[in-house]
Amino acid sequence: MKYEVIPTSYFLRRLKQLKERGVERGVDSLALGLQEGIFPGVIIKGTKGKVRKTRIEAAGQGKRGGFRVIYYLCIEENKEIYLIDVYGKNEKETITPAEI
Image (cartoon, rainbow, N blue to C red; front, side, top):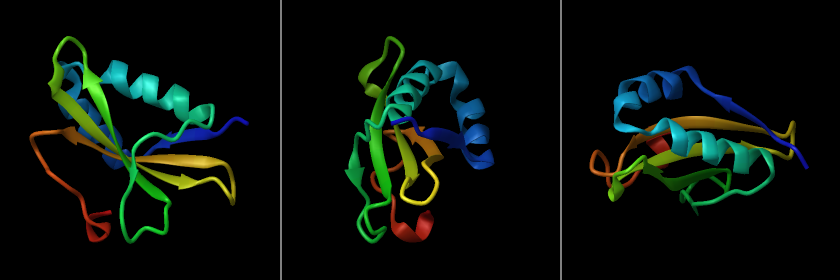
């Protein structure tokens, strides 16, 4: 089953800010998996299972240089997945439902 992956305007701004740090390859790989129905990461509590946080690697930086991506599954209604946020692992520890 194919899903449509839609980056939000906020996500695109954040991605542009992080571009030099090699995050794009990881985001592209994640998006391909999401399109195919592979939903990695942990469910963020308080979101009824629709928002997940997953880790992606930065090119050539290993685990310490990794990033987190927050995405919203809107798959029951219209088979869409929204990329909400991307940030360095060292920027934030966790994200709350209120921040989404």
